[in-house]
Image (cartoon, rainbow over all chains, first blue to last red; front, side, top):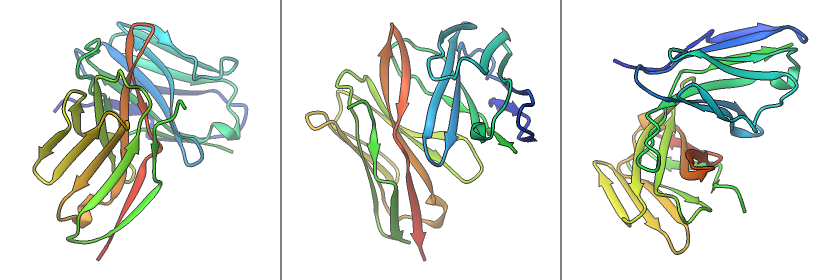
Length: 116
Length: 113
């Protein structure tokens, strides 16, 4: 049963601390997306990768957020320093990147981040 | 505009049909999608429609597409308590040669017993 996994599921931290969220995409998928979901803003695309290369990170606050794919099985989203307004659920999704065809994205369960 | 728009809330009696509406913006979208998000979970693909179709039926789900008006709807027949969730429509957009999905705001469907 292939699925996207995310760790941790829940994270509570204090303002100013570094937060690292991890995602393991489905094996064989070549695109990885990071989204943030809040009540006010809904679902926002932060960044996405194809074949481990960042294609678009225009949705991320550049000064504090960074996203990387150290290898094909791991994507990370880091916030340093964290702020209370970063409190949200962060989703990772992966897909096959069909380039114009059906492009289903498979979502992980999310990391619920609370910054106090 | 740039946004994919949906109503935020819909309440339906159990057993009735639910109709969730969406307007999108990119007339060149190849596929349009409906995702479902249950409490505490990620989004899950429910169904999709290819842009050259105007209707697709899949068991209790019917998707209608009006390309002229850029309007997409999802009808759930015989709505059950398990259908309570947030439903997102999404359009595919080509961005510097790469496809990405733009999601609507989501419609929270509440079932009234």
